[in-house]
Image (tube, rainbow, N blue to C red; front, side):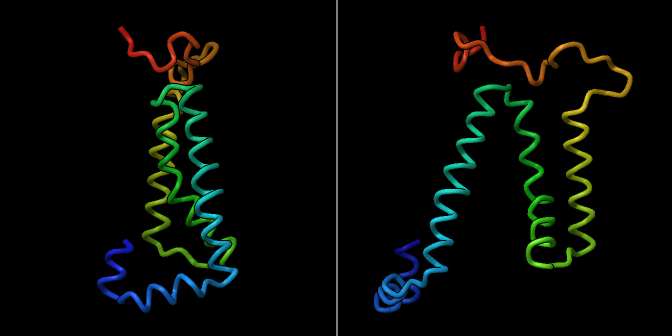
Length: 126
């Protein structure tokens, strides 16, 4: 990205941009680097260590609907009808993937959320 910026904008523009950062730009960079990345990946890796991937991965599909809802609540953005339909489709898809079929009894912990044993964590199944 730096090389592309240097080619398109030139070294003077890139140097000026990097040496004249506002507090808001520094805070947004810190948020992206620390909270969104480190905390997000920490939670993700913890979930994958405790549960099977098939139990965790479907929830990544909730990112767009949560983003749409957050933009509406925090910024007052009105979602377009296509965004609402897409978000509803994603919610239904996640529900189909993670909820047991109607009428099926769930005893104990379902196979999708079974914890891995400490000895078998990270080991390929035989």
